Image (cartoon, rainbow, N blue to C red; front, side, top):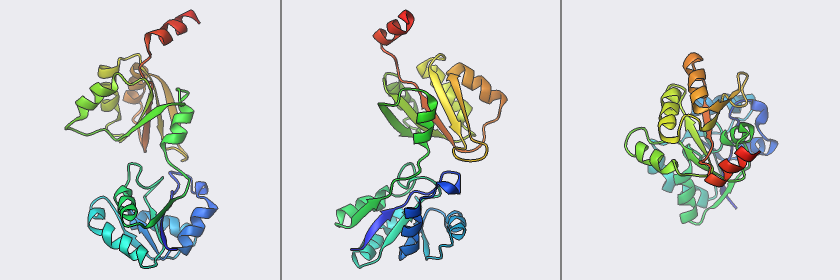
Amino acid sequence: MAKLTVVPTPVGNLEDMTFRAIRILKEADLILAEDTRTTGILLKHFEIQNKMQSHHKFNEHKTVEQIAARIKGGENIALVSDAGTPAISDPGFMLVRECVRQGVDVECLPGATAFVPALVASGLPNEKFCFEGFLPQKKGRQTRLKELASEYRTIIFYESPFRLVKTLTQFAEFFGTDRQVSVSREISKIHEETVRGSLEEIIRHFTVNEPRGEIVIVLAGLKDKKEKETEKDV
């Protein structure tokens, strides 16, 4: 039976592509791509010549019904984003929702997403965490930061390198300069780096060393009184 397959693609190193993902893309009747130029490089590397169609945040709301209908009509369609797993801070959610609404089969392959390696490598508690993705740029930003100030779980954010220092400075204002944080950039790429320390230390680091590449911020949650007392005793 025809279906929509959500296909994660590497966030950096092309060797992170799975055999199954390559097979699915080769077998698909159509590949929906966030940017056909970016995906074209990936497809060329793996000698995949299937037809592509642009599917991004500016047009997805207009096309999801049509695409779901095509799958119901018998086409197998694969969805990819520029990097990582579609619908995680990338286009894809609206299409998946529409397919579910129309009774179309949806399958998501396991695979790359930037925040998982950043979380694991951070050294911060990861048995419970919350994923915030990109914070609102203007409206609602301060309100959300106030709400997160009392969050006990580890918190994960995505951020642009151009806004990193400004965002970390805001975090220091709302969460305190001594809150622990880990910043990972260029995950799975040649210049991959993870910097760990207090917000004060990391702000100082990236003020001197201009950040580049895709950024994942992993911020420690608020520690309760008992945890702090336990740390002092240890």
